[in-house]
Length: 340
Image (cartoon, rainbow, N blue to C red; front, side):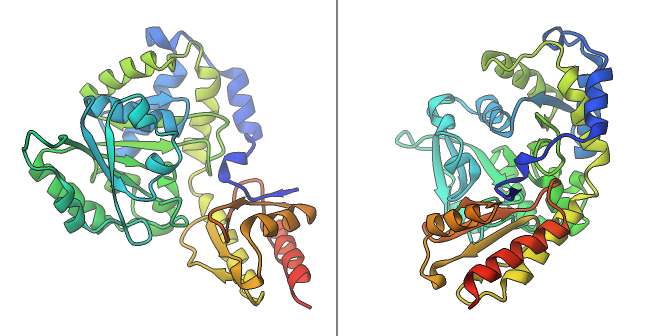
């Protein structure tokens, strides 16, 4: 099977496996694991934040951020198709007791004026706007890179209102590689950031959240409350460190493979392919008279895995386990199925 469902399906490299085997470990709940400390220090340095905290997943990292920034009854502003809103099991409501208020963006990018208009005035009838969340790259929009200027404008108005900004940077490394803009500059437009190490970077487990020393100390307690306080976590932090230090630049290969796939599928009449910016390719199949499910069923019979992203939209995500040769095979199999 050629697996293009997600960049989460990557397998750890031999260097990661060796690092896990050799990792120096300690009890991280007591803050005694030297390997995870090394990882957190490196991540904080790369993101330009005072401190960082290793968490088990991007969802856990995002929810710890919401829990740390907000109080029950508060309101969080975020884009209408944000991962935090669509794909995290309503956890901000279930766990933090906060109300999400969505803003319709354009390909995942919110208009700063719309964000400003959504901030609640001081009124007894309204919840307090306690957090603004951004997402870069934007998953549902197809791996779109949110422009740095847009983030700057939203961060500036948030600071004027005294509202913190959290960035769901699950694929922030992709944004940085695609644009040449440093992680540091993106993170500068936020108070806190979550970044996944287990997607395109290929670590078997884990994400980082980063922010001020005070934020991370509070976040550490929320991680413990959520059952995320691990013990000899160096066993998974070691491969995550390899991912962070050795696997970032190669994301450009994934981006090239995504463009290769999109360009190849242009030859199939009836398919509409959205503009590719990073490693996600969105393909609309309604022109073939197919639904996403029927199209995916045929793909699976041809040895290809992808996922539905709407009634007639399919998402392909290039990743470390799929090279250019496999992308050519995907293109050839789809063309042979739909070109007569």
